[in-house]
Image (cartoon, rainbow, N blue to C red; front, side, top):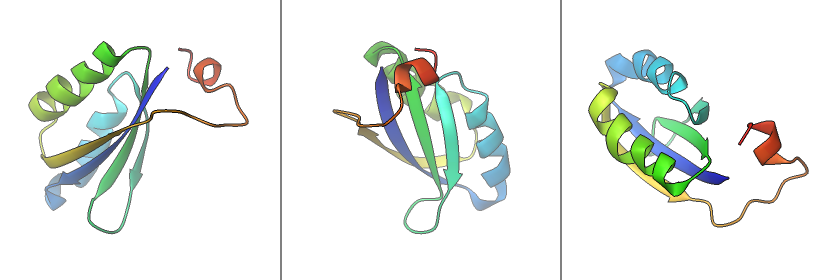
Length: 90
């Protein structure tokens, strides 16, 4: 499983639209509204780097209106008490 944390800035008037659009993307498991430098955090959990690339490079900038900036953090290793791949059906 490939996991990434995507930090997202959005146009304020489109915040809820962006949240709903993100939740509709296969591979986006969670979306958090946050305080600070970024407006949203999206957790992306997919089976491959290619699937992650499609979301980050194609879907977010070209299909989700209202996103003004993103920063993607790739997880190198995941530690959890849960079997994350099984939990997210990957």
